[in-house]
Amino acid sequence: MSQTSQTSTPMTRRQWLLSDRPQSRTQARLGRAYMTWQRFTANHLAVLGLGIIVLLVLMAIFADVLAPHSPVVGNLGGARLLPPGSPGYLLGTDDQGRDILSRLIYGSRLTLAVVVLVAVIAAPVGLLVGTVSGYAGGWTDAVLMRVTDIFLAFPKLVLALAFVAALGPGIENAIIAIAITSWPPYARIARAETLAVRNSDYISAVKLMGASPFRIVFRHVTPMCLSSLIVRVTLDMAGIILTAAGLGFIGLGAQPPLPEWGAMIAAGRLFILDQWWVATMPGIAILVVSLGFNLLGDGLRDALDPRESGQ
Image (cartoon, rainbow, N blue to C red):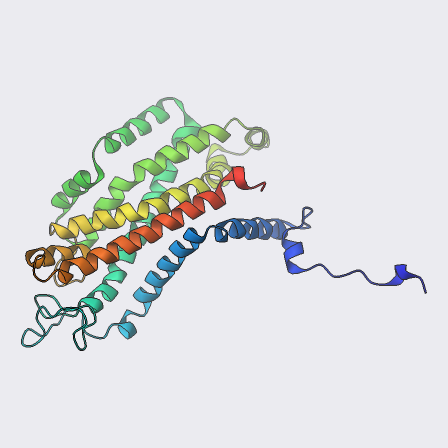
């Protein structure tokens, strides 16, 4: 019997994803996503950063299950300023007899909420300002970029302090203040990306097809800016955490008895010499989470870099 009648070996899932001749848009998109994931996982530090962030998210979701004690109610009678390793208190207690581990676990919810809300507010604003400024040009570009320059002229923490002082102390006002001060770098990045693509051939083709400037900006220019914006937002999350902790440290962020990590450090500074764990434990938590976001951002930058897409 002729060998030509035998069926060919079926294509594996990996071969289907990496095919250089995709049969559909879905296959092409999944193939790009798979190659991006491969480049990301090749960076072991980036995977470590992703693991830290995943643990933070899980800790925030299951805080009610993981926390051994209440984060706001302490035992002043018999559990005040206990050192780490004390029975029932793995990381010790604070001056109010509250379990530090439980407060760190519940504080992850506040930290994650601040990061997510600031990103959700600031990133779209910066993306909108940058793309409109870069595509419109002229006086629109001049006005929007001068407003951006004004915000960039002030240190982020100082400007956030001014807004919180005007709005009043509290975690909600702190989130608004940090978001107001965080959008200008995103606008700069979006404008630079827009200037790079607004005169390209495919934008000219879309214009010839009769697309409106609104459609061009939001359907064709904005997607080209997303990868750079995602990387910058991820890298900025460590700074957002530090800014929120700084506001909490001086009493303008989350108010007692909320277990915010910056406020916990502020409460522990009075005991730093003798009861070091009160301020050290939330400081370590801030360090680890900030490191996780930085490692994740570096990995995303390498994975989403267009210059690496051909490798």
